[in-house]
Length: 198
Image: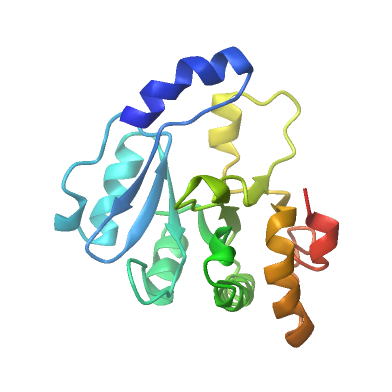
């Protein structure tokens, strides 16, 4: 909330829509809370079900981050159960941090296949750990006149994911060795990496 409050005025002046958010570190794993009105306190004391309830109490949207990774992530079974019980709206399965470790893309590929098989909607955020990773991965939405309300309402209905050009070399190394996964129902995301470069 502190970072959001610091930049929201500047972003509004530039015509950039911002939403207050928090990566809620529950004891089971991380969950994105988007559209919160106040910080969720002491999330480590909550399991993922309590945390998603707290997020929903604020009228915010919950998204599971990087499912199945060994550290700081919910298990795939937890994500599936949360999704089926309408506690999360999507899973964040693509990260722009591939320059740190190109093998991340292999994990993303598995997560995309798994989400597609189970009917889970997917999004991709940059998950930036440093300035150079901001915007590395972007989730796209088809909205006529976007504002905070319409963006929040449609978070779980993306039209695509774009990957920035500086990540292409890392991705191409992987694509030369492994089949590229496609997603039905979401315009075959990642079907052709070059097609989705911004």
